[in-house]
Amino acid sequence: MTMRRTRRTASTLQAGAAAVELALLFLPISVLAFGTTDMARAMQQYNSVAKAVRDASRYLSNAPGNIDAARCLAITGTPAMSGSSCSGTALLPGLTLAQVYACDETLDGVDARCANHKLQPYGTAGTANAGIVNLVSVTVTGFTFTSAVPFAAPSFTFGAVRSTMSKKI
Image 1 (tube, helix red, strand yellow):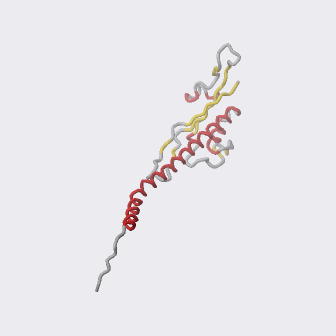
Image 2: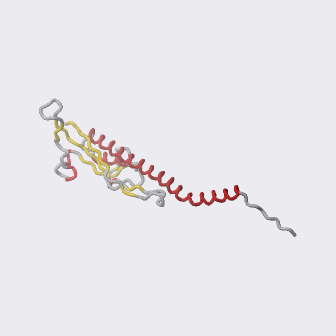
């Protein structure tokens, strides 16, 4: 009986080495890909919050005194109220009415967070560009981004997102 001996060629050894290299690099490459995708989602959510805050402060500058409607606009994208709560679905998961604070000149002197919103000078004194304005501001605090892939990107809480606009008297 004769035994047949197979010879390992260089191409067979190269194929095995490539498989080992792929196995070693697959985990770091997948973490990098998933982490990049999740951080892009975080940027998209931050931009959504920033736009909602700007829209709410613009609404409040044109509709003075409608603080609750402006807060609702920052949450749902519409100023529609149903009693004391917003009617509509939140723009982002986890965004609540408790995280939104709005100020206008009516709260100046009433709430410390709304100080300096009433009768603020602007422009250079003594010129045609000088005047007095009231300010409105909307702030979202404590919004948490929840990672879809926590092994690649962590969940974290954004800092305060604030927009202040002027409203001529």
